[in-house]
Image (cartoon, rainbow, N blue to C red; front, top):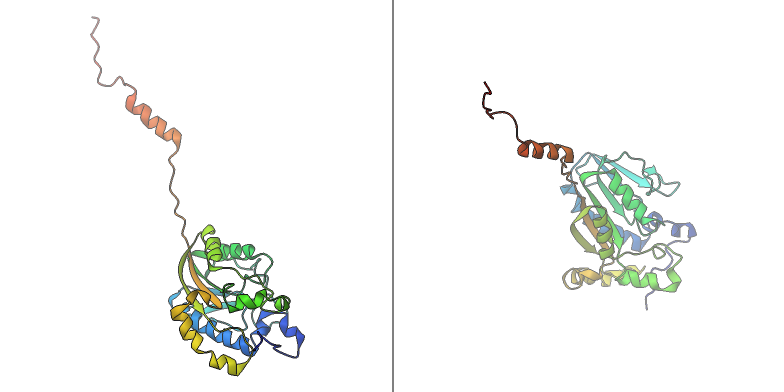
Length: 255
């Protein structure tokens, strides 16, 4: 019987962060699947500035039409990108057009703070792309096995699509579309994964909700301000309509 995700490297430090895990065989397969899915979304999103939050082993912005792309890393020693905490982003409010979040919520102690920061930096009508592990999948099953709780990517918190959509809705985001990718179990064995490749085609047609990774596209809603008329102006107008005036009234001449 194949085991889920056998040791990815002789260096134990590779298990301490997700970008390093992507260098494994299984991580590479997942990275390609996620990259292909994101490539179908980014060409249709326009603007001046794109920010990719940490969590992925490489940039996902190659197919974006936005020329200025910044990758934020929360792991010290990263060779590229900007080092920052996802919950305290060094960007001005309403200054970013698109935010890509590859597994940025699962391994942070305060995912709500990250979403609030994304809401803060996005312009009205800006877009966010969320990439998250699906708890109702082979990947979620592997996470539940007690032996994987202290290893990447199993020690993270996996969130359902319904919960993520609720969080986005509370922040004022409209759900646009979703994609499901990687239906094979997380087996770190090349020959077995090649034989199970048929599950990708079968999963898209028959069991899309059991995909290992869920990708969601949402748009920040523009708040419409309705002007409220001052009450005192309304009262003055009403009084002008009901109070009689001396204009046009004739009195008898006492003379």
